[in-house]
Length: 128
Image: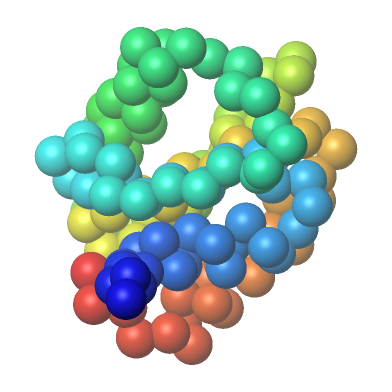
């Protein structure tokens, strides 16, 4: 009999977020050390970046998050950030010490997506 592998909570969360909106292309959870803990990509989606470029984008998100901490005392903690490019929106949601990274179509309603992610985070008791 084949043993069924249990899906980790981080992976379950990525699947849940991916299903929030059809405009979401990619969801990943990046830990504070820069390691991608889990991710899911829309099934028919072909990545626009190579593996090396994807790692650079993740490092850039991590560096931005670390730089944002400089202003926490005076401005408060960053909850989320967004970057709009000609062909994609990058959304970063800050959660504890992790970052939730999303790429979406530029036509996506990022406010709606972020609100749903934040409510999903509040409703779930994630162990990470």
